[in-house]
Image (cartoon, rainbow, N blue to C red; front, side, top):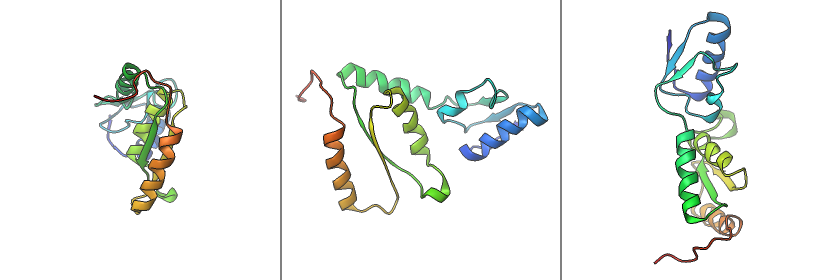
Amino acid sequence: MFLGPVCEYVIAQVARFSGVVWGIPVLTAGAQAKVFDNKTDDFKMLTRMLSGDNLIQIALKQILSDFGWNQVGLLYENYEEDRGHSKCHFTLAAVYSAMGKKSYHEGFYRVATYSYFLEQLQVMSTKARSESPMTSYA
């Protein structure tokens, strides 16, 4: 058995390799991204000790449904392109997928400024609206 790793990019390669070359299972607390739900080929020997991001997807989709919302805005921290994607990106990718890829989404880098956030929130307020029976909060 191979224990770990937890980094999404590393576990992807280890899990693919272990199933094809070593024929041994991989046990990890990582691999939370939705892509690891694929147990047919790539990750057939992978076992996650925690549930995947799909549970966040299911919970958020139910909450949005309860309020009658079908369009949301997702603003998340991401890494510079040469580092790959952040955990925030992978988690919200499951939510984006659950929403039928209709949601407005935008990643930001750690060095984002106040004016950047203000601009993004203004853009999001126009692109992430849907017709909803609920118009105010009391």
